[in-house]
Structure formats: C-alpha cells, structure tokens
Image (cartoon, rainbow, N blue to C red; front, side):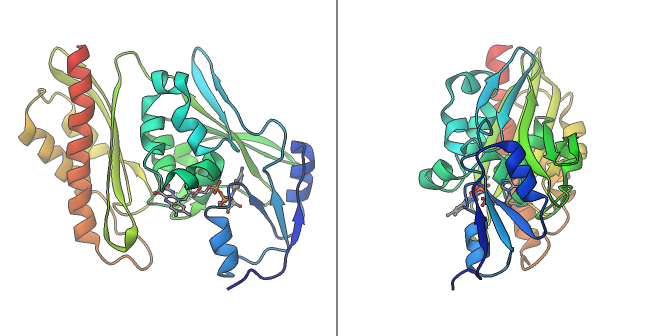
Length: 287
Ligand SMILES: Cc1cc2nc3c(=O)[nH]c(=O)nc-3n(C[C@H](O)[C@H](O)[C@H](O)COP(=O)(O)OP(=O)(O)OC[C@H]3O[C@@H](n4cnc5c(N)ncnc54)[C@H](O)[C@@H]3O)c2cc1C
C-alpha cells in the first residue's frame, strides 16, 4: 500500500518547525522507522508531514556534571556509540543496542522512540528507570515533563497537538549505581525486557529500580519488586526469584491483539531475574 497524499515541509529552524506543527493535522517525521509504516498502511493520514531531520540544533549529546541532555533528533546509533555516555550512563547504550538492527538505529531517533511510546520499546523504559525529564515546545510555550507523566498509555503520551519533544535530560545516577538490561524475544515479534539500576553495600542490595517493557501495560517501574529486592544478600537467588515473580505479577495485560499474557508474565520474571543478577554482579565487584 502507498500513503495517502500529504503535504511535506522541511524546516531548518526550530521556530519554523513549531510554526508548521501549529497547523491543522500535522505530524512530525524524525527517523521514520515507525511513522513510515503507519503512513504506508494509511493508519495515519496527515495533511502535512513536518520533517525534523534538517532542524538546526535538534540533535546532539551534552554531558554535564549533573545531567546528560540529548536532543530529540539524535540518532539511536549515536547514543549507543557515544564514548562519554558509555561511561556515565551505560544503561542507555545497553538499552539502545538491542533496538531492531543497526540500520534501524542509524535512522531512528531518541525523540521519535519516546514520542511513539511503544509498550515494547527500550527507550521509554530507560527514560522511566533513569528518571528522565522531557523538554516540550510549541508556538505557545515550553514545558518540562517527567517521563513518568509523559507516557499515558500504550502508544500514548501527554504531547498536545502542535507540540514537539525538543530534548531529554537524564540526571547522573548516584555514585555506585550499576545497571542490567535484558531483552527476550516473545510471540508476534514483540519483545519482553527488563532494565535495572541497583546499588550494593556490604554484600546487600541497598537500592533497586526495576522497569519492564513488553510484559504488559505501558512500561513502568515495578514498586513491589523494587521493595522486595531491598536488603537481599548478593547471591540469594531464591529471594531475587521471589522478587521477580512479585514484579511480574504486577503487570497488567498488554492492550490490543496480544493474548499471551501469562507467557509474557513468565518472560518478564526471567528478564527481571537476569537483569538484577547482571547489575548486582557489577555492583558487588565494585563494593
Ligand atoms: C525493523 C524495525 C525494528 C525495530 N525494532 C525496535 C526495537 O526492537 N525496539 C524499539 O524500541 N524500537 C524498534 N523499532 C522502532 C524504532 O526504534 C523507531 O526508530 C522508533 O520507534 C521511532 O523513532 P523514529 O525517529 O524513527 O520516529 P518516527 O518514526 O519518525 O516517528 C515516530 C512517532 O513519533 C513522532 N515524533 C517523532 N519525533 C518527534 C518529536 N521530536 N516530537 C514529537 N513527536 C515526534 C512522529 O510524529 C511519530 O508519531 C524498530 C523499527 C523497525 C523498522
């Protein structure tokens, strides 16, 4: 199938892009890895496509003392290979490295993935786990939104008509934080994965953050699992397995055509166990 006819704008300045976006029935085009199939299947039929690829200053990675800021149009591959990011926020590189294939990551952008809000995607989960803040702009103003408030459901965000994601800010993780990221293939080519951030003090898990994608419902942190992990001794595999089961049990079914909820819950439990083990192993070696 071919897309329905649409107008095409390719602004070079952000103000110009926001002007185009303020029109009726306009969609932004970033890497096109999710939007192009939607256009081709006529699931979206915009009047205008606003191509962000030539907008000056929308791509780039700044590593500061307290946070890392990544422009919305930054390619996923650039996030994956950025040497400083690998050092300060290795989870981002780990998470991005499992997105699709290298050619997809060469085109796909961080802002596109966050705006698309696929419940089986790595980047929304990483943004939630790491406590990211998104900067949104439109012709009428700007606002900063925490990732936890940005995602409002499967493929849904709080973006309003005419609004663009301009950049994403990730706070520097606390000293001693170590990470784990695991992705498992599931039915219908929709993966299940887990990302974790833990600290280990004197052989005990002192803090844990756990987020799952593709396990059911929109990506999100698993409070019960995080609580159950706190105080667990490194090497106590049965306690980690119990915490993972508690986390997986928290997952609601994925919306739409996915009817394999129990299987997904099982895979989520396995992914949680493995991701926690990864993070704790690194943390314990450092402790
Ligand atoms: C073969 C294949 C395999 C893939 N595998 C994975 C995978 O394993 N994991 C994964 O997470 N993803 C996967 N993807 C999706 C990929 O990560 C996409 O790059 C991503 O979902 C969308 O990013 P994009 O830059 O291509 O955005 P686009 O496709 O251009 O846009 C996606 C949506 O975001 C909106 N948008 C884009 N930029 C902005 C912005 N700055 N502000 C507001 N709205 C914006 C668009 O209007 C559109 O609605 C895969 C894609 C393909 C083709």
